[in-house]
Image 1 (cartoon, rainbow, N blue to C red):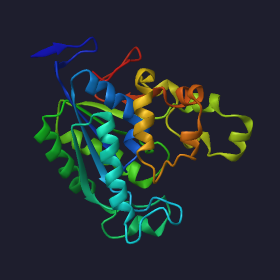
Image 2: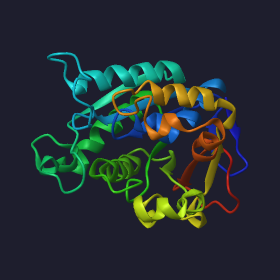
Image 3: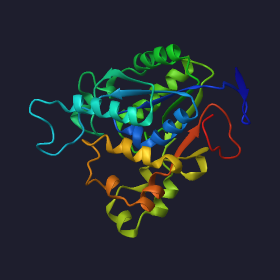
Image 4: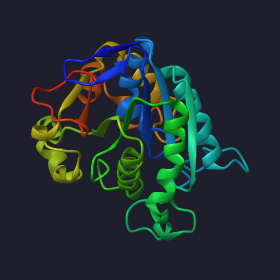
Length: 265
């Protein structure tokens, strides 16, 4: 059974949404609220993660003796997925590439060095197996220039070429909103805002996740190796957390959007 949507096109009443991310924790930060809202509405939600986040940073003594960070991060993403209600979690067979310019970018097996068509083939198999209706990835700069995020953009778009008919969205950050929220000190000491996300004018879809913000926050906290209790994320008070994370931003790529959309379906 299908429904015709106001923006055009047909989708089943109960759709399958595939969220493609670079590392464990990205899903909770960027799309955790949207994922949970989709679950609440009865849709199937699938998370595909390109790497296991081997090169994330943790303080000394955080891991147990002989424990590998990748194993911890895999456990964390499954915990976050359980909190969100995600129906399936899959990993592509690649390693974390590290930050841009690091030697790890070129290590054998890194996602950054993977041929785009090969990586897309893995994703395509999952999309076809799930009979996916929606695919999300990142904007052209991967949100903030991380090589694995940029590769998610490239691989996601290549996969979409091979699976026609998908609703296609790039998860992004609202650069103008970030600029408004940053204090003068933040602008002086923080990252260059112009390298973050996308300008408001190109964002087509703004998903209000304020009603499920408790779930999003718990999913983020599940990634304790990267988002510890004393992190900036977890130290935000309720109003500041709402301002920072109460809306999830997307750019729709499969259709022209005249008026900003409030939802992916």
